[in-house]
Length: 101
Image (cartoon, rainbow, N blue to C red; front, side, top):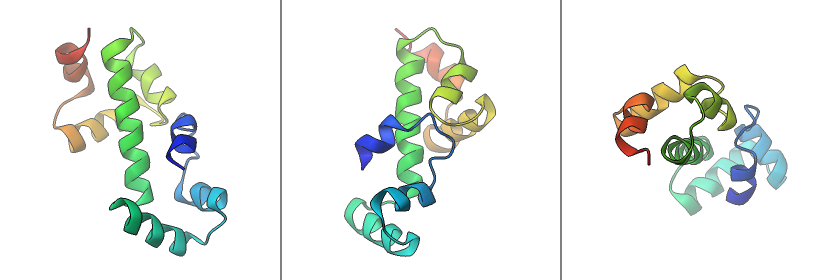
């Protein structure tokens, strides 16, 4: 499941509903089983995988931040910046300045 999510990150349509269709389960059942097995909600897992992909690209590529946001499925730079602030306490630009190679 996580491999499929990682391969589908660029899609903004990567929703809990899409995950339940992939697993052929009801949304309620899927969410409960997923949280029991992983300790987090499916939506939080997608967010974390998007965040990890964006972190790698900010560190290793020269792409602009908006391109990275779209590639990782955030939709736009503002939404990615908000996710970075909420999860890491740092802006995307500051993250790149601090950790890029």
